[in-house]
Length: 478
Image 1 (cartoon, rainbow, N blue to C red):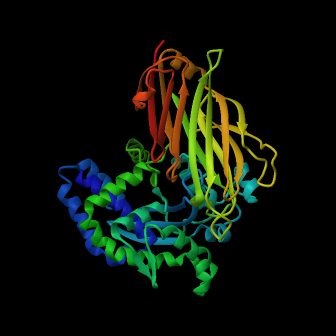
Image 2: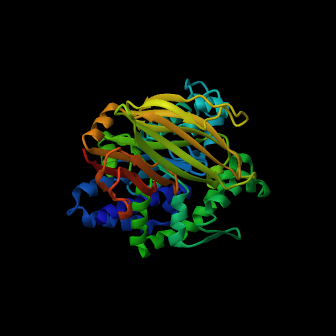
Image 3: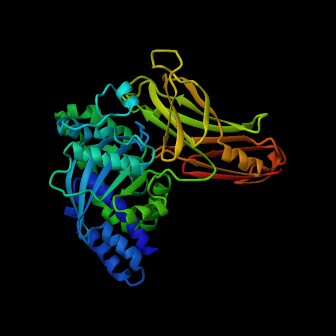
């Protein structure tokens, strides 16, 4: 267990080191030595985990990580808009920052002679002619998104002199916010950054504040350096002072998909998947639901959006079951530098074999009240339905998709058992989940259970959330 703690803390250090422009490699030799000593002391008792840690930290050979800064105030299916990235090499426990910059630098100055056709919604709503690295995380399955990120990164010439990328690490601003809750506020150039204001203040400095400081556009994200210098100057000591807190935080951030991994090596990836650290769309034989939003050209408006997802099923007179997945979007913002109308291309991923019936709330565009086209496809073994919706500031809008459940789920319900896996989109926060499942027959038991007042009828009604993936099981009388 101690080695597992070191692995998780090392992940936070990897991320912080990338944000900090290599600061850790310069200033925190004591932390590096402490990690090495822990590995040495524990190698006899935990050889498997020791080998994993040695691999992660580059003791066997140098490791190169592509680190993606996923801004979840601008949601994308794979966790948030890739606003910046870092290329970090670990060699015998020492991080060497090879590159860190805004993705627009690579997309604007990198190679242009590559073929890559963007998904139609990106082309239509962002008005771009090709698929760029910044938009690469279009799949809600992080391994699929990471493979595309690596592909486009290489095609655009982002690798430089490094021979390969070993793994991808994605993280959202929630990581730094949560670290600040433990560490406390930090002050940069007479401005205080707290857990509450970190993301908004950082976004303002990157989008507008850099001009007042006399910085060029290409330098606008350099302020991350000063921020990380102050944080890491104390973090290298704070990690050991509050070891258990950081360990617990690491586990929670992984479970809530605010930190996610992809490894090129098949064995390493299998280990990540087994620990549920890979942000992967899971397989299941029962019912399935994953709602994936894509903010397309509406600034950082996700910070002002409250989401409430409901899922219902109901029997028909033909022994089939109709399912409805509905999201309520509550826009609590206004038009300003950070917030606009919310322009969202939605895909809802459901059990393969589901048959589309109708959608309510799709729009042709934000300027048209005509119902929009509903797209369909299959990805990662799941059926998906997709459409566009726009939500004005101060308003509430709903979008729903109705469909028939596939025959194997109908059969399972009629045989007395129903299972549902609901997966959280990487990077989302505080999504409410309401289940209203009518099986047309009396329920015998359910996990998790309903309130006792609701026992004894044909329905499974439950209020939950999607802070993490959720599973539900219902036993039905025949």
